[in-house]
Amino acid sequence: MTVGKLGVIGGSGLYNLPELEIIERRIVETPFGTPSDALTIGRLQERDIVFLPRHGGGHVHTPSELPYRANIYALKALGVTHLLTVSAVGSLKEELPPLTIVIPDQIIDRTMIRPRSFFGDGVVAHVGLAEPFCSVFSDTVTAAANGAGISVVQGGCYVCIEGPQFSTRAESNVYRSWGASVIGMTSMPEARLAREAELCYATIAMVTDYDVWHDTEEAVTVDMVIANLMKNAESARTLVKSIADLGLPDRRCSCSSALENGIITDREAITPEIRTRLGVIANRYLGTQSSA
Image (cartoon, rainbow, N blue to C red; front, side, top):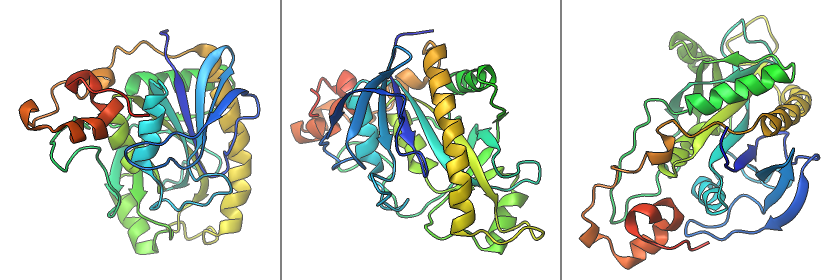
C-alpha cells in the first residue's frame, strides 16, 4: 500500500461521514467556480480523507447542475490521489436487485449538456478513457468490502443519463439490450475529469430500485428510492471505513500519468492566463502554480 490521500464524494443519501475526525471544513475557490459544498478534511483509521457531499448540504444541486470541474479541481488541490464516489443507481439486470452494491468497470455516457473537460479555450489535451475506472483501486474497494463482510458485485457497465427525470421504459430496455448493468446520473463527467486530474477513480454504485423495464415491479418512485438510499448509506459508511483501514493501493496504474503526453498545444501558445486557469490540473507539465 502507498501513502496517498483518499477523497470521497458522497452521493444521494450520503451527506457526511460521522466517524470522520474533522480537522477542518474548507471552502475552496477554483478557476472553475465553487464546489458543491465546503470540503471536510479529516482522519479516519489514521488515514487522511477529504469528504465532499456531491449534491451539497440539503441536496440542492441536480445532477446536471453539479459543478463537476470545481469539485474535482478542489479535491486535487487538497492533495487527493484516490477518489471514491458513491452513486445511487437503478438496476438493469434481474440478478442485481435493490440494495446490491456494484463496483462498475465501464461507463456509457448519455449526458448532453455538462462541461466534460478542464481543457479547451486555447489549450487542447487528450487522455485515454478506455478503462474509465481505475482497476487497481477498484480491486482495493472490493477487497475492503470483503473484509467488512459486505457483498459486492465487481464489474459491470454504468449508464449515465442526463436526468433529472428517470428513464422511459423504452430507454430502459435499450440500455438493457446494450448489456448495461446499472443506470445513474452522476458518474459522468466525473470519471472524465478525474482522469484528466490524474486521480485513481472508483465508484460504489448502490442499487435503489429496478429501473422501469421491470414489469413485475412497481414503477420507480422517489419514496422507494429514498427508503433504499438510507439503507445503502450505512453500507457505504462501513465500506469507506474499511478502505481507510486497509489503505490505498500503490499507483502502479496509468492514472497518475494520464496527462503526461496528453497536452497537444504548443507550450509557446499557452498563455499565462490559461496556465493559471489549469493550475493544479497541469502544473507538473506546464510549470504553473496552484491557484487554490
